[in-house]
Image (cartoon, rainbow, N blue to C red):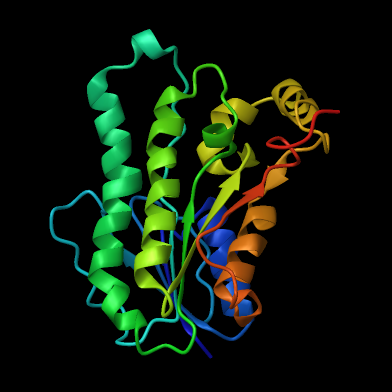
Length: 232
């Protein structure tokens, strides 16, 4: 049994990952911000946590952590000229500064693990430019830089990798997939002609946390239906 910490594990990809890890007999410590209608799962400890607070209370986490995953994110698609600079700051605080605070607060607890691993999340929009994605791609680009820099600094003890999905059918993307027409149009944009599920992305994160990925660090893994590399 291993100890995993999932920040933002009550919905979407985080919830799917929490379920996968718990089903494997692990102990999962997962946080939520406002979501309260999640399904309580055996082997999972739930705690409310607002990553935007100056001081994070992480005392519910055990002294030894085998894996840490940071899931909080946002999808705000607008023309660049209509985005206030403060909106970029808000996204950066949630997605980058929040991850930094959690990692700084918990990385020492990972040093006693045999093969500790950190997983962060980016987006296909960082490597492939899209209209109206500047706000999304700016913060997630920083996450990719953070992942690679930490992987170098934490080597050889702690592995750090990043998963970069395309549009995934989660509550976060609900406005973009609110009708069957929108779902089909977005599916058709992908070479594999379908929208990814939370489980598709969570399975990659679970692999990166596992001993099977013990020789993988500093990578950005694309789980995007072929969007970043295929033209069909």
